[in-house]
Length: 403
Ligand SMILES: *Cc1c(COP(=O)(O)O)cnc(C)c1O
Image 1 (tube, protein in one colour):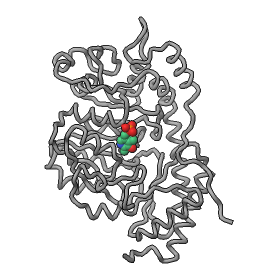
Image 2: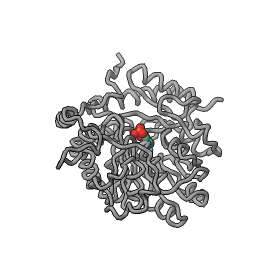
Image 3: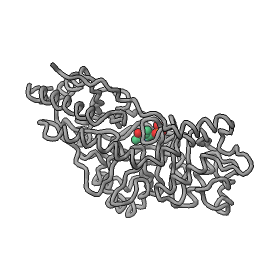
Image 4: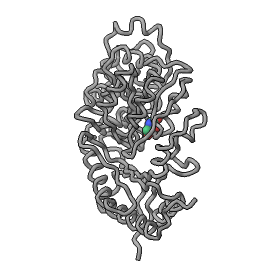
């Protein structure tokens, strides 16, 4: 009898009770807008920013309406103008090229390696084409950040980090989001903290922080920010910076503060799950497990593996077989974008040069979420199902490209 997995790949854990209580308190007093405070009161949003700055070690933090908003705000803050070219990853999620397009700029896609990180040789070759890199740590894989920063520094390229999947991760002891000029994070439901929608931006640069605060829609209330620069920094910027509203509110901040306190424990739980699946997949013929470098501390909230050089039909067979046993895999190699799996060549508003070496990788990427509602036994079962189904298709010999 074949076993079936019956869990739900999109079910997150509930909001901690402490967060629910804090949210109810905000609902009861009604002061949801971050600048709507009673005399002597400090807004939940301002407190959250202070705590998030401490968590990342950044001088400044700003809470915003979404991760995508943080990316757009960062691009505006560093001065990206319509028509500018912005380097970014060929393997990322749609909000990243979307943020670039939203400011009228043009993405220049940089390839992906077998380790699922940005191809640093390709980056080096293209670094002269733009003055900003929006680096997406897609699915939590960190590239050699020391080499990346050396390349970007040598070419005068400003780095904005998209840390939607690396909140809590680090490279060589430096938290993700703290290598570049600005780090952007998401607190959307499927990320590492859940406020439905939401995001952060962190930086050590006071002018960038002041611009981001003005952009987010602070009116002239920037002095209420506990994790912002001193008022003098705003003296000219406040007249020069447009308001592109995208604030966080106190309800979301109230939900997030208790989640931030337990994030280190949650990360440990994610990694136990990740390592259980990884262990179960290791040594499966035809399947490549993604190597994780020693310098990387990751957050295993999702897992990827490669069916490299498999024929499309064979990959589809694996997807179907796993799906029928309750294991939902996402594939980045399909002819049409499905759900979250769009590719650089799906974003036709942003014309791209073909990247044949990256296409080979993208065609082989399978991706799966690991919500914390899964037990370790669930994870072992999921891995054994994938192992069996990949093995069955591999053995049938149908994986070869016969097109
Ligand atoms: C989710 C996500 C974003 C955007 O975050 P939202 O909060 O959904 O706007 C950006 N980049 C990546 C890689 C993401 O997964």
